Image (cartoon, rainbow, N blue to C red; front, side, top):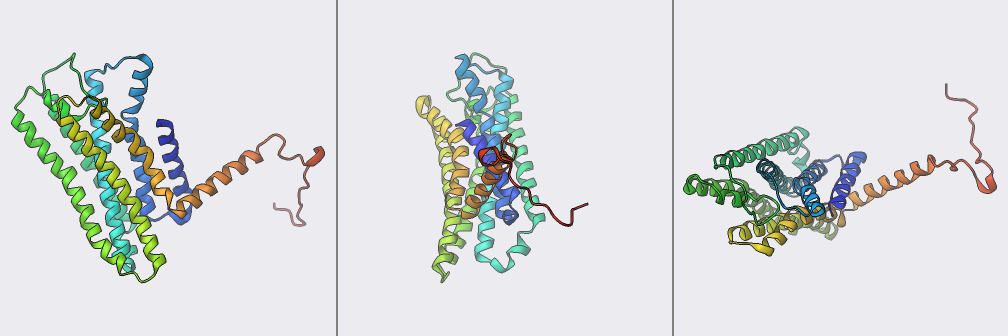
Amino acid sequence: MYLVTVLRNLLSILAVSSDSHLHTPMYFFLSNLCWVDIGFTSATVPKMIVDMGSHSRVISYAGCLTRMSFLVLFACIVGMFLTVMAYDCFVAICHPLHYPVIVNPHLCVFFVLVSFFLSLLDSQLHSWIVLQFTFFNNVEISNFVCDPSQLLKLASSDSVINSIFIYFDNTMFGFLPISGILLSYYKIVPSILRISSSDGKYKAFSACGSHLAVVCLFYGTGIGVYLTSAVAPPLRNGVVASVMYAVVTPMLNPFIYSLRNRDIQSALWRVCSRTVESHDLFHPFSCVGKKGQPHSIPTSANPVP
């Protein structure tokens, strides 16, 4: 599943970058989301694979903090990218004539940089809070993602301060992005219903449906991890929710976006075709025709200097 996640996201990035028709803000955000999904799953799954091979479930204090930092970083970036992509859909559907002016390349880069720096700030805040704890060892954590809420339960500092931080963080990086997505679709749905062409409605609903599916998958599994972490002990349900959140969601995202997207499918097909052609070109017998005869090579009366 990890290899499928990495290869499928890399293939989507290659398809977007190699096709000039896909050099638009929507696919720019999609390719960045693919990079973040690779980092998101790489923050947890490789260590889990090593643990499965060595039959050991021990992680060092520094390793747990590092995993938690990267998990928070990439999770926040994914949430912000999904909000930005909802805004992109809102402008494209509700203000199509002004779309090239509003969602310009400078704004796209600005959104990506702001998402990264705010997520990095949140990740460092989590690390700073956890570092205020006294050193602990021989402590069992119920899932493999080093969930921040479980680490905060081990705090030796004031639990009231930790609770305030958790509520503030959930509001800033959970409630506000979801509110932005809901507000965007509150404006998008009536605009789609006013489209007279059935083909236009289908294309709009298809693009928005893929985005909504990814939003529901990401936030649904994230809420599942949060709720199971709040229960003591989460046991098997917490492990299942963590696997869905950290492994299944990044793997399914590129499939969901390319399922009904003909542009992505066409770009992927062209990438695969060029790969096969280049493989045939460099095959040792590619220049030999039938019965061992070489293929004829056309010549030009005016050779290129």
